[in-house]
Image (cartoon, rainbow, N blue to C red):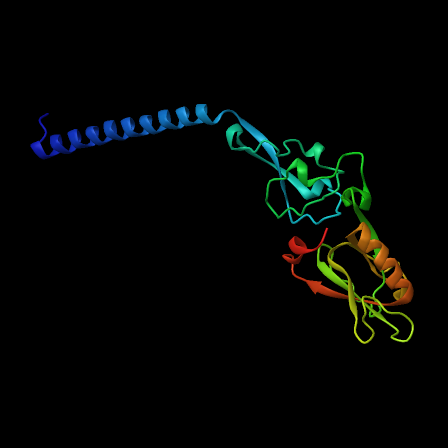
Length: 219
């Protein structure tokens, strides 16, 4: 049975397209294989399921694993969820971000002591107005003294800042009596002494500070 020239041409064109497609696909697959060999084997790494705040103890539901090529995984990334679970967060981790070992306290530290670096102190304060900013917030601590009783830095008629850009480590819950509810702040050793004096002799107030202020606060 003879076919018309048009049918023969259409058949030849189809074969040519098929051969070209196979060659292109084959070339792409070869390129992908070469790239995969360059990137190395695929390995798991740990990512945050949601935002992780400073002072938080990592739970199984807080982290997950994603698979990436070995060359794409940073050296300090945590690759086993068991190495993160139970550790205290020392540097905030954003949702879906890679969890790094340096963002977690050593395994032998727990609770608030896990986020207090050498030279700093965790101090609990009770603001006079009951203001309790969320954990992770930066605040200035202002002290108002009885002007007839004490002078601090020469100030008698205005409040003075006794701690600058202090990070809120924890916030008292409902299990604290309302008049004793407060927050725990991360301050340096010098500020801790001033805060203790201010709490005993005046009223404390917290003012929200921008995170950038922490970069310029005195050591």
